[in-house]
Length: 137
Image (cartoon, rainbow, N blue to C red):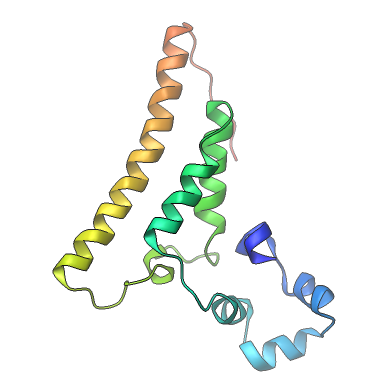
């Protein structure tokens, strides 16, 4: 369910209904949704996998759809209020200089990806002589 709908779009109630268990059982074994999420995602996402998810999501559609897709993948791939995305990416803990450099390069690549989409949208709007405002997500 997390893989299909994203962390933020799955409730304990949804999980219980699908698994045929009660909420107290989830809370007993995992404490909360975040604990369950961490248990079922034994294999953490690599930076490469995360960037590929973002590329796939932003590869199709008009600019607004691509920006929305980026935001959806970026924000729903991790537990809500987990602004420290690196916590869910491999090699986050105490990094040596080379690993830290690789992680920083990955985040730079993510930033470049969304900047490309936004710049493409601005160029298109400018060439059409109109700037459309993106609707809030």
